[in-house]
Amino acid sequence: MPGSLLFALRYLFALLPFTYVLLAEPALASAFSLQHYWLLFLLFLTSIELRRQFPRFTLIGLILETTIVLWLTYDVSALLSLLWISSLLSSERSDVVTLMRSLLFAGWLAFNIVLFDSDTTWLVLFNLVVGLAISFQWYRLKMETEQQLQRMEYDHLRGHNYELEQARQEMIQFSRMVEMVAQMEERSRIAHDLHDELGHQLVRLKMMMDASVEVIEVKPEESKKLFLVVRDQLSDSMELMRATVQRLKPRQMNTKSYSLKHLIEEYRDAPVAIHYSMSGQPIEMYPSMEITFYRNAKEAIANAIRHGHATIITLHLHFDQRHIVLEVRNNGCIPDHIKLGMGLQGMKDRAETLGGKVEVATAPEVTVRTELPIL
Image 1 (cartoon, helix red, strand yellow):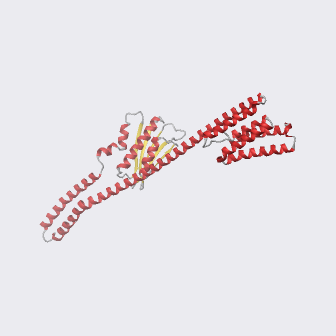
Image 2 (cartoon, one colour):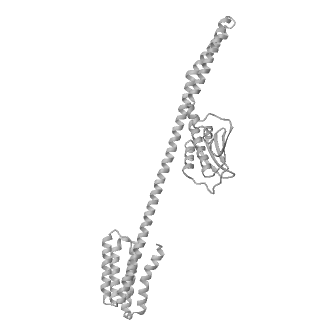
Image 3 (tube, one colour):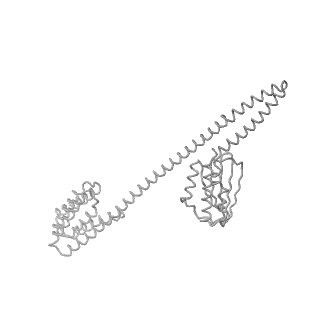
């Protein structure tokens, strides 16, 4: 309820009866009565404003206003009973609800007693306006309560969303730390395997080669035997190298399951043509990177078919010195705006976990770009 409307009604019911009686009531002919009339009216307005500014004086102010209006109604004019409507419209929510209602009921009853001996029209008019004022106040307080509950709910949701966002950021940071630790452990394991196994063999082979060079002129047959042993040892070292690299690679089943070529095979029978290409210098990707590209490409293809009704989809994987970029383009319908749904949010979260990002462009074609750094 706009505050300006309430302010206008509050002072309308105070000024109109006061002004009319001031101009038309013969009982105010004497200067003494006029001074009292002005004094009581100003005291009445002061009490209303004090109640609005200092709610703790609500009960005292209401008693004072009711007493003033009762006296004016009884001693001057029944029309001044409408001043009490201004008091009703100035009443706000109170902590002592029962006592407040009791005072209002007592005041209403007192006004009915005072107006009982007056013209019946004043009694009916008074009760009608009081009923309208109470209805107006009830509706206003009801709307304020609903707005307050909505604000509280909004604040609660905003706080909850903030906590969720904080938790999501912490989870992303934790995932990055886990990924970094896993990469460091993987690199450390590679270094230990090469040093402990292949490194020792290469040192031994170098010593044997040095020995064969020293005896090649004196004992050629012995030198030849050493060269043959070195050759056999080099074959063993090559096999050890292959075994080490094979052990460092992810399992073949996992690699194939999350490869882009396998994804294209999944859509082989779909009514859409999918083209795949690569550029740059390909490198071996971590499983987490391969899985991220696979899932983001799958989501982009599904959206292109479901929402864009695309018939041609192009996947391009580019390797540069610092990043690996996957672009998924389609010739489907171009949307008016990109809605951040669960699918696109999931793509962004997966990329951000690895320190990358996801971008969506709509010109000249709908393109979903996933960029991951090379760590």
